[in-house]
Image (cartoon, rainbow, N blue to C red):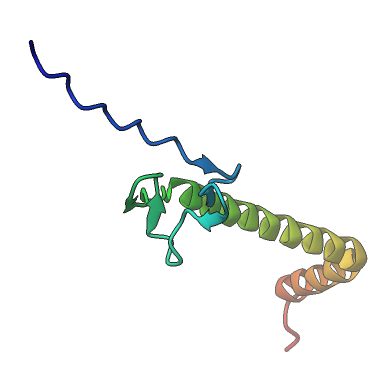
Length: 109
């Protein structure tokens, strides 16, 4: 009665990608799955634009680095100040006592 439809082509098999996703297996060799400029990715059928990378992680890393650097500077200045006070505390006290004595003394006529 009716004609039988032509047989359908089998669906293309899924390409096998390397664990890091940067290579795919053609059946005979490994080929790069990412273009040299990093803007395109092979999805097994065609080259598609690479999704944009999120810069949130980079911004968080920079923020953490700046905060850690500021804390490090404060700690370094604190340590240097403590060392100076411990080593030169007596000399500093003498200078202030001499200044105080000079300010409170009456000048001779």
